[in-house]
Image (cartoon, rainbow, N blue to C red; front, side, top):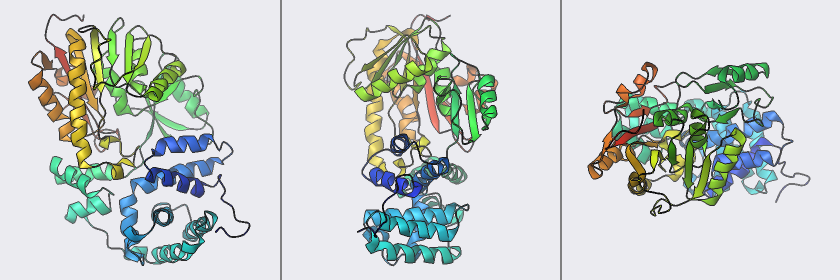
Length: 462
């Protein structure tokens, strides 16, 4: 029971973070829950809003590190604790270990008070004792070093065991360490300027005037990194001046190279960031068919297109494990397959995926990726271009997909991006002509992969 006169305060960041983390444990997505919570509590102090977001993403991103520290001082094995008790401990421990701006005594006290407020007074003593011990003795923790790289990836870089093994299998040790360390950091907030309504210089000036610190992205002409937020909202949100989108994701529409007058299929389009970017690059002069499996996500495409000011986009619900017989064969000039994938390249933005993904998921996703490519290949005109992209780095979902597609579709040839891209993008290309971005190499971008194919036949592009 809660103590007398103590009631949960929904405007308190720690309470909000706890409720969101409860839902994440049940399978919900952290970003959607945060957005929903903040929208329903518009009176929350900006500092509390920032702390809530920091706590949710931080606890999920560094859960492995936090749990390693807690295991040193908990009187019970963590796996024997009930979920809500463990969430309280993680919230408190994250503040003690990672947030220097919060005094240790305040972090412990607030977590114990939260236990009382949510009706868990029975574990308040355990929470208080464990966190107090962590506060006093955290300097004595013997953390794994890179000399024992697998344990370092698991307990310092907060990777589940299977993912630590995956990195070590795919990358040299130095690269595995650097990539894992990069994925422990918070993702940058990146905006794509909506060139249908403004330009990057104007948006940068507006951000500066509003007190935000921002700079231009390195690779794309539309990209902006917001390095420090002011209390004021970002300017131009209601007017559709920008789309929140990582720079690696911005690259994808450029790699498709859409042209005015093209008929384009975005096969896995929701939530629509790349779809609207294609429309902007063609100045609304392309005809775009955008497909997604779920009706609610199709609605997101429509909402985003309306906000950005995009035209000539037809969004439709379709599951591409079934043949899209409503689409005419060889009728599209360009096709984008931004395929469902493991999402390991965006763990900073979707940190719950660290703990929800399993190796078996990748095998299922590979089959889905192959199926989608098989379904859309007949829809492309001879001479047309098909771009395959994923926000992950696993070999099975990247190079292996390319090899399989070429082996089973003899009328397609992979294009070599090394001969097609501007000089500034050459460092993003691989030895086989694909594009691969990694956060520890490429200005903090998410990890993406893209390969483009051309269909044999008479070239139809100028």
